[in-house]
Length: 292
Image (cartoon, rainbow, N blue to C red; front, top):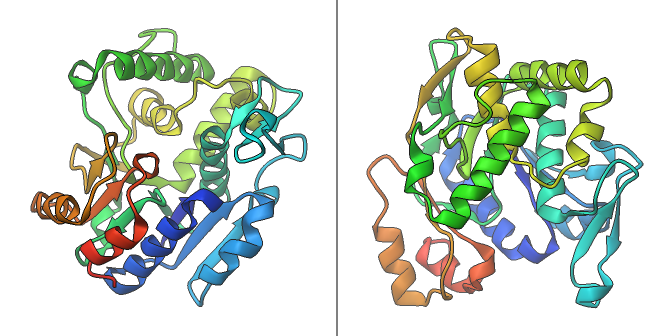
């Protein structure tokens, strides 16, 4: 199976995305290309990361013209929001999801490996791991909702309910399965089938249906489609192996803490992610990842 790696990013994560690219070039094999999806104003900045197997994709080539970004005056222009006639203003992380879905549907490759821009590969990894006997490994953790903090649990429930409504799943209204991880694979043909289902149920474009809500998790949407509607054991191999060790919240990590964090990878994990909102210095991450 041909496999493309896809990252949706923005200028605030540029240095972290550079680290991701360096780690992919040094440690990741088996992919046809790496696609970085960004807002139009960020294309020139990210073009320095392009190469023989890395492309910078302008979101205008993926998303409808009626979804447009504007500076947020409440943040003195530092943040962005996207306006459309289809729904409420969307933040960057909402639009990053739309980009990934659109890119997956447009791929010639069979598999899209989605990796966040604040992830760094620490060990050698062949993306062929995601394929076994013509099936693609599908990340799912049944019952994991109960392990989340109350706030996160309620957010996941909202995502699950919205996914069910978009897909026309009447029962159950929501599930306790978690499908979200920072390094996962999707089948492009399954994404196209999922979008066709959404358009059939809503009577409009999939982009309009998804842009009409902020309660959106693309991983939950794909997960519920694969689990409850597609049901193709010839396409997917479900499992709960999380390849990436994540630091989601907390104070910025210093050099010693980063070294300790990197040493905590499980034997099956090949990458680590330091959420950009923690403010951890990219230079320290570079040294801890052995990329200095």
